[in-house]
Image (cartoon, rainbow over all chains, first blue to last red; front, side):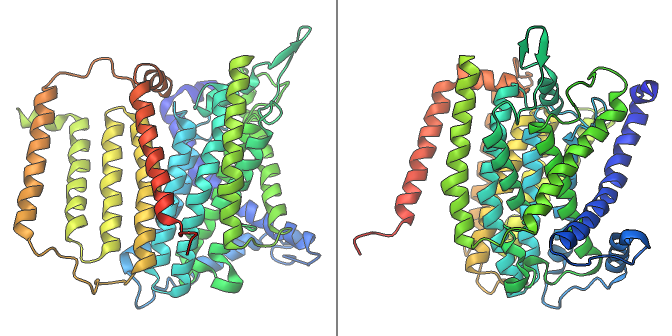
Length: 343
Length: 173
């Protein structure tokens, strides 16, 4: 195992395979989870027949249906911009996976500025959303695009500021380094080192802000005004069909996975679980499983929110970001820094 | 300079490709008949600049360029354009400047001046004591350059407050 992982090309091939196959595949699982969980939460039947037991083939059937549909471009649309927009959104989402650490070795590149890179790559999608809204030549699309841009700008700030607390505590911006810092004992009781993830080391506020802001960045209920079906008929997605709609759809679920993976790495210890030997070869197998387990918990939280809360109003959304989340995140940074210097 | 040698270095070839794309995109920024297209071409030019910084090993600057310029400034440009006027296809308003030749001369003159000054200042010397890692950068920024850093942040704060003062409605009326 370790001999293969030490060979550069094998490692690169594995990494590319993980991102190219695993992410879309896992997105299908998340779509299925959303369908089933929403059905249970709202006492509906949900997918039941496709594929037999539990209707497991429903996301596959949905995907095939989307792909064989005609790729329509409205007559008044700006063709090149309209066609490129979904690719930019998907590209921004997939680029984040470069720094998601699945195990000590299974990371595309453990950049020195990992967290910063993730935030930068994630911000590219906003341009794609605006392109989609404008190029559709449709009032609803334009409104959706504008709402999305205002929302993504407003919530990027709390997202970045919430992460700063963890960066201060860990003293590094590399994702691998942050996991390693959480694998260090926080304090000792006798000779027993107590190892805790940053969520339990006092970053509760940071975690809450990060999760709220990531829901808004993903435009999911209660922050789904950009694509609100009942008022904007899907906003910037209105004119999209076929493979390009699938790209947006895939981008949303891949984005859920990447946001949850970053949150799990920063606040929940990533691929590390207290009690596991972090330096051993077993981590190559256990690490990805642990991380995926944590991601699934967070994704469940996101789905739970979606089927429980009503949609916020546009002004409520803005005042939540600017008047509550950003000041709270700043207080969190000050408190973390003070704690770090004093102790 | 020997062109054969120059081309055999992969770095130079990548630089050439990025630079040509950047030049083409920059020209389209000012010649495009549609404002939104101009802004999108500016995205390509800025992405090229970020790529050049990455080639130089200045990771932090490159990601800042992506986060701040592409992720925020261009988005604000697009937002502003779309909220005021957003025709697809050809813009009905006249985007062209009436004085093309003086504009071209000024642009070329600025380019020549900046290019000459920067080349003369650095010559062929490699920059010594360059800091690239995030930690080193923070160390330098908050020790040696802390006063310029604070001065800049003070100016930005003043601009921010000024923006709020200009934007808010007068309570008297």
